[in-house]
Picture: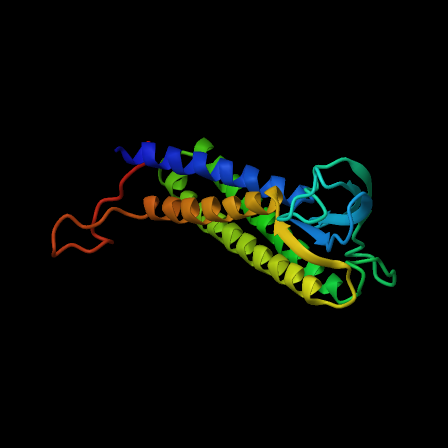
Length: 230
C-alpha cells in the first residue's frame, strides 16, 4: 500500500475518533445510576450524568418492565427528568454534585482534562490543514506535530475516562447517596472509542511522517533520502 494511502486512512480514522470524543464530551450518558428497587408499582429515582450535568429521572417500575440488571431502569423508560448543570468554574457557589461535595473534585478534573483533549484535537487539525495546503518539506513536516497532538488528545481522553470511573466508584461506595448500582452508557463508549482511535491513529500518523528507513546497513536515517508524501 502506498504511503499516501496509509496517511489518508489514518486521517479518516482520526476524524472518526474526533467525532466520537466530541460526542462524549457534549453528552451526559457516561454512567447510569440506580437505587435498590424494594417494591413494584412505585417510582424510583435513577440518574445519568456526564462531564457537565447530572440528570435525575423518576421512573415508575412495574413487575412487567422491571429489569434486574438495570434496577431502576433502563434509563430509557418514560418518566419525569430534572437536569442540573455542574458549576465547575463558579467559585463561591455550592452546587449539588452527586449529593455530596467531594464528588465535585472528580468532575472538575475530568472536565478540565477533556478540554485539554479537545484543545489537542484542534491543534492537530490545524497542523493537518496546514499540511494539506502546504507544499514540499513543510507539508511533510506538519504531519509530525499533528500525530503527536492527536496522540496527546487520546492520552487525555484516557485520563478523563479513568477519573470518571473513579468518580462513579466513589459515589457508589458512599453512604451519602441512594444509588447502589451503575452501568456505563453510550457516552462512555464514545469516549473509549475516541481514546483508542485518536491514540493509535496519532501514533500511526507520526510513524508514517518519519524519514524512511536506510536501505543499506552503512546508511543512517540522516543519510537516507527523505520520502515525499504527494
